[in-house]
Image (cartoon, rainbow, N blue to C red; front, top):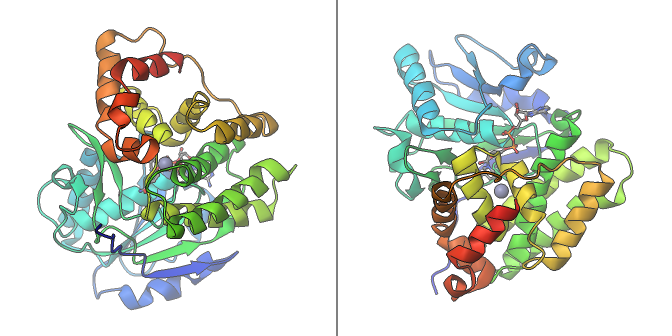
Amino acid sequence: MKFRNFKMVDYVVYGRGCFNQLDEIIAPHRKSGKPMVFLLDHFFENKPLADRIPLRGNDKILFADVTYEPKTTYVDSLAGQLRNEFGTVSGIIGIGGGSTMDLAKAVSLMMNNPGSSADYQGWDLVKQPGVYKAGIPTLSGTGAEVSRTTVLTGPTKKLGMNSDFTPFNQIVLDPELTANAPANQRFYTGMDCYIHCIESLEGTYLNEFSRSYGEKALELCRNVFVKKDKWDDECDDQLMMASYAGGMSIAYSQVGVAHAVSYGLSYLLGTKHGVGNCIVMNHLGEYYPAGVKEFKYMVEKNKIDIPKGICKGLTDEQFDTMINVSLSMKPLWENALGKDWEKIMTRDKLRGLYEKL
Ligand code: NAD
Ligand code: ZN
């Protein structure tokens, strides 16, 4: 048995309004003549948050276009643009949902590593630390703020740059930044956390480290989506910590069936991670009976729309593509179904599941 020795985020600040400390926090990381680059989710263009960014000298705000989930081509073009303009930069500060945070991590790494980000999709392929990087979530649930990966869609695969150089140097957890996110989006991203917990807690890779964080994250998700009748500040506070704890839980375990199936959807159809997980979770009663029952209750209680019929009319070839992508996620299946997972999740069985979505 080889135990994972995992690298964590260096610094964490948490609290309502802690975004106001950003200037002070990043000051020691400024290098003379080299800008701090703020990669801001395009949702915040012309919004008050854009004016609160502590710009100094030749600092730059880049708006992250997250219409599609991050692609390696987009990472390469952002890093190329910064290299052409400045040579190097003092740091990259990603402010937004999971997509923007992943972009910030990847661009930071690509400032100091040659070639394309597609060359580094996999485990421990990144050889040089990136430039200083900080992550500031404006949606809670993905756990991207604590993870050692950055999920990218490349020319041949959807896979992260998973490495010890990937975690942020700093995260700023300010629940005020998540206030007023639209209810559907907040739910989809929040459910990413809930589903991480179910998959981790029901998985065969579970250990006490994962369980401790996973149970806490699950309790917080339940407070927010099951117990509360109306969204309030406490919900933002709790969901932000649920995301953090959920991410910590996954660090030592793995996700499962919902993620393995949802990756196929996003690869073929571009379905976004949060909503894709929800679409799949609706049909996983066989694998996670209690979790799926509660999930359906939360959907109803919070009056959320989950798209249906998204695989209608797909060709055999398209189903095969999704099945191939999904079955290639071996650790996820092994975590969910055990060593003999290939006997349980046959291609036919998986095709049947995709047809229901
Ligand atoms: P997202 O970042 O894709 O954003 C979804 C939408 O919400 C976008 O339109 C965005 O502009 C908008 N938005 C962001 N903040 C908002 C706010 N406060 N108010 C209103 N709108 C806001 O959504 P997400 O669910 O946070 O992230 C999903 C991404 O995270 C996927 O790309 C997925 O692959 C990635 N992910 C990464 C990890 C990891 O460990 N690195 C883990 C899980 C998911
Ligand atoms: Zn996820």
